[in-house]
Length: 341
Image (cartoon, rainbow, N blue to C red; front, side, top):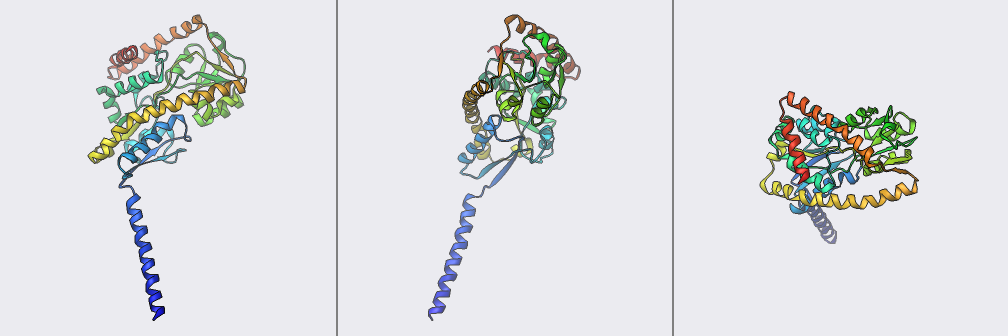
C-alpha cells in the first residue's frame, strides 16, 4: 500500500512540475515577436534599437517582443530595405547612401556642409523630413514606414600616412566616403572608394585606401582608428542618414495597444541614444590621446574652401532628383529651414 501511495505522490509531483512549466511558459512567452535586421555588433549606433526593445516589452508586459539580430544574420546591410519590402523581417536599420536610388528623398540629409550643429538638431530635422509626403511615398515603394532616425555625428576622416593639413593634400587620396561626403571629396580631387564598414580597417591597414570617414563610434567599433595616425577634428563634411524602418503591413496589423507602446517608446529610445553617445566621447578622446593620433584642425579659410565645393553638389542633387519627378528643391529648402530652426 505504501508503494502505491509513493507512486501516486511521485505522479502528482511530476504532473505539478509539468503544469508549472506550462504556466511559466504561458506567462513569459510573447504574444507577438518582431525580428530586427542589424549588421555589425551592438554599439552606440544601435543603442536606441536596444532601448526600443526594452521599452516595448515593459509597456506590454512582455507580450510584444522585438528581437534583435546582429552580424547580418537576417540580411546583408545593403539588402535590409529589400528584406523589409517582402516581409522577411519586421524591422531593420539601413543607411540611405548604401542605395541612393532606392531612397533618394532621404539622401538630402547626406548632402555635405548642411550645417547640422549637433545630434539633437539631427533628430529634429530627420523626424520632420520623415513626415513629408514625398518621403513617405518614396519609402512606401519598399513597403516601409520610417520609425526613427539614427542621429549620426559628422563623418570626419581617420587615415594613415601624411596628414592632410590643407584641402590640396586630399588630391589623389583614396578615401572611403559615401553619399554626399564622397561627392565632396571627389570635388577636391580625392578618389572615393566604396568599402563596407567591416572591411575598412583592413583597407586602411593594407593601403587599399588612405582614409575613411566615419562617426567616432564606428572608428572605434570597426577599429579604423587603430590603423590610423591622424584624424580631421573639425572638417565636419557631413554625415549619413540611417533610419530604422518597419514593414508597413506588419505595422498595420499591430493591435492598438501594441502600436501605442511602439510609438510611445521612440522618444525615450532616442533620449537614451543621445545619453549613450555623449558617454562614448569620453572613450573617443582618451583613445586619440593614448594612440597619439594627430588631430587636424583646419583654418577658417580651408573650411571655406571645402564648403565652397558643396554648392554645386547641392545643385546637382536637386537637378538629378527633380528630373526624376521629386520635389527636390522643396525638400532641400525644407531641410535647411529646419536646421536654422
